[in-house]
Image 1 (tube, rainbow, N blue to C red):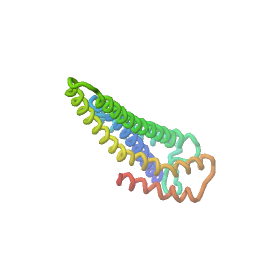
Image 2: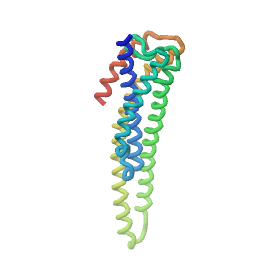
Image 3: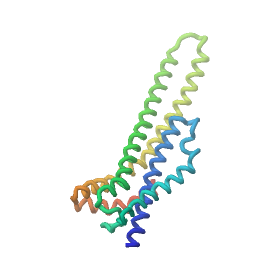
Image 4: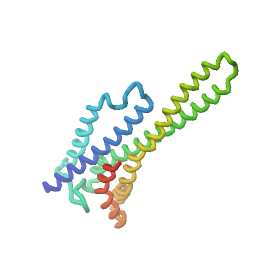
Length: 212
């Protein structure tokens, strides 16, 4: 039992910690793009984020020992028991569902924001280029030059976003089959094919995190 609780605690601790890190990365990206010269993302509060990424998962992992329940041995790892249901919902999958939803909203917001800014710059440039009068040529050229620089910046950001999206896509892909498996287990159902995929995805999670 001690070995199972030890392995289960650190499995839950590392999993929840990874979830918080991914959420922090998404928030940092959002702040950097929307307020590039004001906040510096989460860098100014990075030490608080470090502490939260350790203390938060440690608290959630420790709550499993309420009523002397602890962790149990499952197919390929030691983790939270399937019953009572609230253990997994409150201490694992509930926060993970929330983090998944937040990541999806954040990255969709970033993507559409950059696309809208590029279109806005193109419209401004088109309007400025169609202006008449020799007296305003210098101002128009200056304005176009500034807009070109800003447009180039957003294009670079758009290319970077495609790379940044790799991690959330990998995150969703890795947790897709465990999510389905957990939903089935909550209904006291099981599927052999899903169980095999989950058995592969759990250790493969670390490999993909390292590569990304």
